[in-house]
Image (cartoon, rainbow, N blue to C red; front, side, top):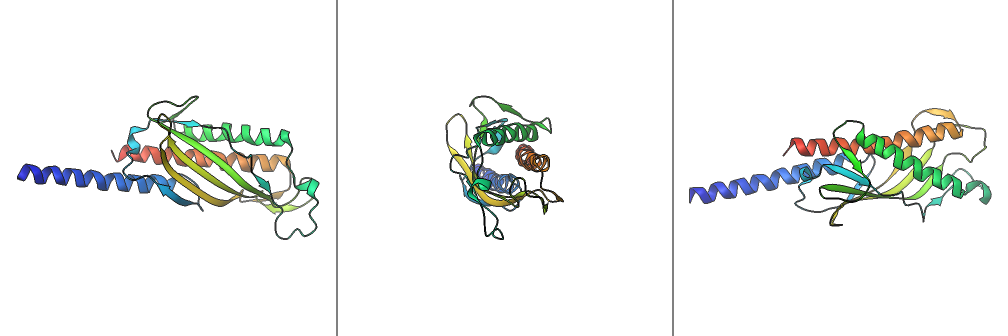
Length: 205
């Protein structure tokens, strides 16, 4: 009888720890503001030891002028294929750098066991000024995103996040250099948050 009670207590404590780790991991993964839309119950994140980053999905991304632009010219608010390729490359490079910055975790090239797969889609990008406009702006704009975390070996969905976030915080000139810097820092911060969250999940094991 005592052994049964002890076993039940151990199981209950394990469920509590898993719940706390799940809450902690999902709250740290993405810079605020973001919303956790789904979290698979009972996931033991401490089993994961690396990440795999899939290419950034911008196939349905809309480039939307800010609300104060009333005479937007369509040509100014489109993204060329060259810039789309650059955005995908910057995302992959910066997110990977952020994940690996602590030295705790690596990113794999292909799905494997004990690996979290990161699938991210940008649905909308709103620059605060059009390319070529002479302006001083706070940051670069905002993006609306949806991120899915999956078990890379099984494809099992672990969590879904979505949010609208400002990119960049400082007042600066509307230049390509500044926008590249802001996006790079934003994606790196996402990677660092993921690494930090998984580090804490291992510490709670």
